[in-house]
Length: 509
Image 1 (cartoon, helix red, strand yellow):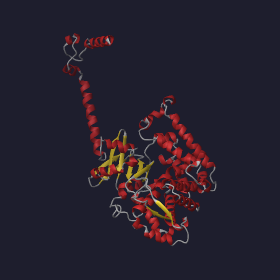
Image 2 (cartoon, one colour; image 1 turned 135 degrees about the vertical axis):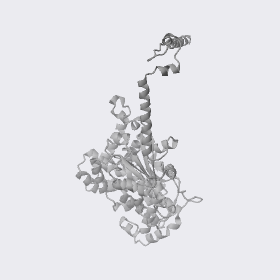
Image 3 (tube, one colour; image 1 turned 120 degrees about the horizontal axis):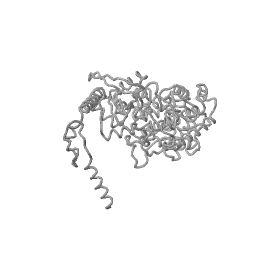
Image 4 (tube, helix red, strand yellow; image 1 turned 90 degrees about the vertical axis):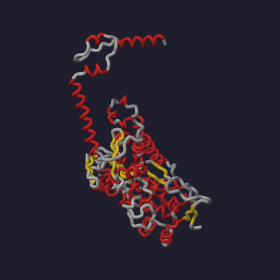
């Protein structure tokens, strides 16, 4: 301790004896004194060129913020909520809805080096994502997942490239229906009657239908613990966990991925996740029905085996969770709004047999009920896009022109749009008889990047819900209460109802 204090004393002495030499003028005798110079002497000693440079720099900074502030969309700044919405934008609808009341239907904000633009209005969303598709067709940059883990092979998370065009052609070719769907729905009903939980029965049914649509009947999922489905689900969960926002510095500072390999300690586990996923996807590709439309399209568009494997697995990665959430909302709605079920039960009782895919056109009330569930509770409440180049937005009411920078994250608050009376009459009411197509409200996205699996999802949900209503009497457990309708469970970016209990009794007994 004494040595340390002595060292500190020596340091203080050195500081006191430091020589200060004025640049112009000043008391030369002060330079030889042991007393540090005063602030006024320091200022006096600075050259005139320094002061000119400093004043010019301050003016440039002031001018930058004046010009930038004048052209930047209005919005919040410097709040904890900004960080919250930036880290998990798919769950930010409630916060954005409040900001829209203050800043208008289109606002922006920054977090770190990232710029975010949020649309809470249907007309604005369509203008940006449909009429200006050349600008708003990209996705927010994902360094960890898209660039490192998927090696840019999952085009759902990347910009519109030539590879994306081929990837999209494969997605559009996936079959929207199969006779096998009826058998999968029948198994789901059996599981529900046997007491299996709603989440598990619905997940197996949806996963099996999607797998059959992509890879063929032999790829059906017989149980959730089946190795193939466990491998697909495990790969998805591992990649999702590794690419959580804010988890890795390279997501915030992308230049870190160009450091020498020995300085990138995060790479080996991410590459291991990629290898694990690719082995699963390639195994499914090799065992697929070669006559399937998606398999044939994958062979026609000129992709290599890895590219085909990633493209064909996309419906399982992207589609199972939101489709299962939609069907669970239908079941929950039957418990919340039982008075709306009479037209559905009537048309189902008129069928000569249990519903099949060919029966669905004759079930308008059932389809309308499912559509209203998706409108009322969108499973993807936020649409994420990014700008490919700079753009301008004219606010005619305020007579202002705003700039939207290249690379900005652009989000559409679907949750606000579907509950907006300007978009839907009496939007806050649940009305299955309304003649509104929820796909026009953005529940599947807008423009060229609208979800390619919307028809497949509708087929699976309507058929599954029709089978449940046709084969069972759905009710609440003793002393039970209906699902609240505003309690949510998230699975990735898909939002479904919180777990609820229901009683299924056979109509055939």
